[in-house]
Amino acid sequence: MHSETFAQRYARLAQEAPARRGIDLALRAVDLTLAASLLVLLAPVIVLVALAILATSGTPVFYRGERVGRGGDVFTMLKFRTLRPDAEARLRDYYGKELTERTRSEVTPFGRRLRFAQLDELPQLWNVLRGDMSVVGPRPVRPAFFEELARDIPQYWQRLVVRPGLTGFAQTRMGREESWAEKLAHDLEWIADRSLGLYARTVISTAWRVLRQSVRGSARLE
Image 1 (cartoon, rainbow, N blue to C red):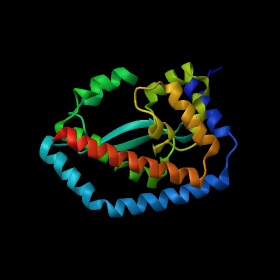
Image 2 (cartoon, rainbow, N blue to C red):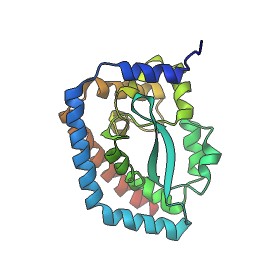
Image 3 (cartoon, rainbow, N blue to C red):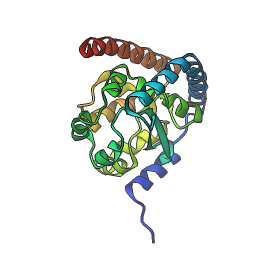
Image 4 (cartoon, one colour):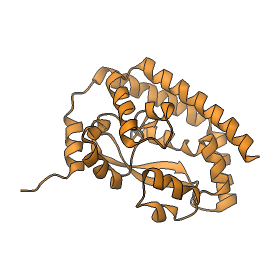
């Protein structure tokens, strides 16, 4: 008899979890409206960033990485490339604090500016339109890390009940240094209490945080 891996088991649990169809349909409608509007409004910025990456570090312009989505489905997440070419191959075996430390040496000068302003995340609006992601939700993780995290944290499968997000509670309340278990507590709070009002507050909080970070980052980079 074929035994399930942790990842398969938790994906099945997520797919079998009771749906909150009403609020999820409402949130999906807001996702589509917001993502489409932002892609149109920010199209000039997206084009300029793409040209700047080509001019400063060549191709590829986009980073494409596999992530675990709702129900355990794996999708390709898009970002503007901020690291040196082939950095993914050098960093693939690391996560958490060690990944953060090793990534610093791989970031290109222009990529550092993109990260400060968080403009590298803009292509994920396309993932939102496709239905891979939501604007608000737990941040997606790589398949290679999912089974290990699920093995260490029994509640981890619950993140798969909703679409992963561009931003979420964990991102508005804490930095990258906190543990996965601490971040999970905030993700589960969003999943349990998700609503249009909470969605709006999270988006506004994220916009304010990004604005402050961009101003500080610009000052540090000058």
